[in-house]
Length: 343
Image (tube, rainbow, N blue to C red; front, side):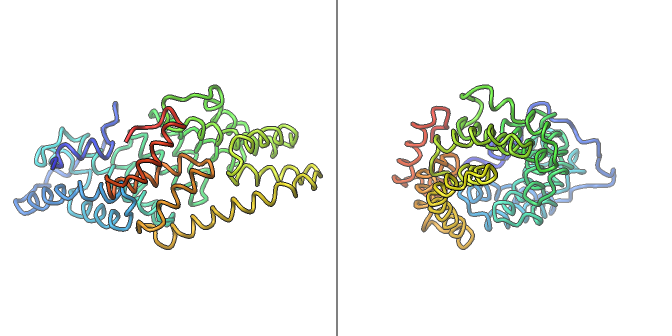
């Protein structure tokens, strides 16, 4: 088994190039005693198991493990002492480690739909490593889920300034839209609309569809209902069983007074929405159980939501690498999405 020395930076994805160092320094009186050193090293030896639970979607177990790790490790203010004692590459590396643990703790709560509880660790992650685009982006997503879009917008802008991932554009566009800044929402998602291929993301088609959907909402809000209708009809043609574009199209058609056309879409929307509700109910009741995950992944595939199907296939493979059904499903997704990862 690999040691925590190699797993900590690589699996947590914390070694971001050019991360700014935190200005806070530890109190000069802080010292490790022998017991504290042993406890910290023992805590880091448990990191690989915590990461495996996280990757497998066992968020309750992973949350407990990340919280325990943070309780046993020195705070980021003590990075200058902790890093050499624990064999890490300097203060910045230790701060990235603590930031990553806080981020993963927050994500466990976020994915368990405990949005308000997710915010404190996500905020602490940005304090531990303020130069991390990943930390600011995840805080922005958490704030969006907590219905604090204008604060989310600030966090996402900071993520972009630090070289955020492509999906940061989508989240920033959503935050700007929910803050009422339609022009900024357009600008945020415009890079995703320039090309149908995005080799810097796993599912370029999904990213583009989300950007088109947001732009259609902007057009509808601006009163350009004809443009919104055309955009939404194209999205429905691309992914007929994705319920959200069809729902938005029904709204626009109703506003245009085209009630007969709106009614024609409602039956298919009802079927897709019912499937989505069943999925969300299953995830809410027993998100850590294997039973049903194969069905959830396949249903997402059938709905054309490949990026969501991939998440669950990878969780199944993390739980059981020999799961042939999950590997077949993932291989099919990658054939349909040439920029997808290989297992």
